[in-house]
Image 1 (tube, helix red, strand yellow):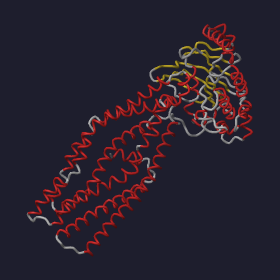
Image 2 (spheres, rainbow, N blue to C red):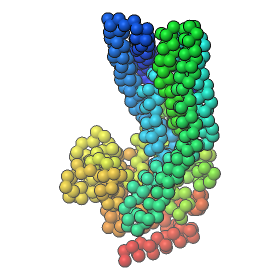
Image 3 (cartoon, rainbow, N blue to C red):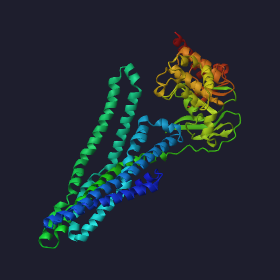
Length: 576
């Protein structure tokens, strides 16, 4: 509990406000006990036939006043704690998303969207009650019962013992709730992540699902994950219902002990009627906060799991990069005996090469040879396991991420656009770009005319992930963004992989505009586009099989010649 609270407090900026909220909640709870005392006094006066209306009116007035002040203090405490809670949740979510920009991109790609949705939305949301209620109210819900119990013991220690007799019995049943908790919580988290992932996949892929009439199979996959989540949750609750019901039924049953004992002590004249009534009424006052404590303890188990999930991600190793920019020369990339393994599979094996300045280096090879992995290593998605990658004469590990990103434009086959205007998507390449600069970049990318043909022109919304535009349109807008960025180095990772011949022609023209006087690395999809490359690297099974210009490779590399012939056949079939 202490660890959970201290971890939560790390995200609370104003700890003094939490303290004030605790104090207000505690004062409210203590004031809230007073009406029970006043009511017992009134009933005692009535039973003794000692009816003083003025005195009773005072007691009633003070009871009402106590309730009013209780709720005023509680209201102020809750208002403060909720304000603190929402600021803390904002800080947690911003911390997580900031962390996402610092860890290796490969780690992010390895996780499903559903897992991050569950982490950033669901797990963080579970912390709201803990900050808004548990942190400020836990102390008050402990102090108020303790003060009440002490007062009952002052009245009569025997009644004091009777008033708390049901608590340890109820606590024994409560312990049963946590039997096998860790395993159940792990299963719950897994089933929740699986359901979220399948939901995101189902929604994002609905067009493909309908196109290929896969509604039944895809829906079955999603519905199965929902049923698994439902069955797992229900199974857990069914195992807990008896223990939960028993503890909540037994723990408040103080009257089973205090009434008979109090009645006996009153009959033998050991206590007064007021003491007898207080022994009945006051335990009722501390049962409510006591039950809240049991609920808080139950919630703390969920909170601990949520905090563990959050902390587990925040503890992921960052890509270590300096903050201060460094001097770079005009050289491009240099790979020195680079090897890279993804999990246990070695994808890149002892590769060495240099990219030429103001020239094009093309990387080709069969599917699975490691081409895209090589491009992603250049773009800083991962850190190499062995060897080193240099850029501008420096090891990339010594270059700040922001500086490296300023130097490089990376364009992949996955052309992601944000759900905002086209001009805002393009200006992500240069935030302070003028309208004329954007238009100039779009003309070079061969997308200016089609943008103007849209209903709202450059202010047209691209849609979720650019869904309102065709694949070729997204590709050209992505290229316009890269052209506007005007980086020294361009990495094209199969940027035309999904383009039709007409769109491919337009994109190739855009690429020719973009790569003038740049260091260009192309992961080639259509080999005809890289005939004039200054250097072509042929990969096979993560190793360099050959390296030369096109004409030389056609003579010296059987693999390259075979790739070229297959590519020529495929391109002819596309044209037909």
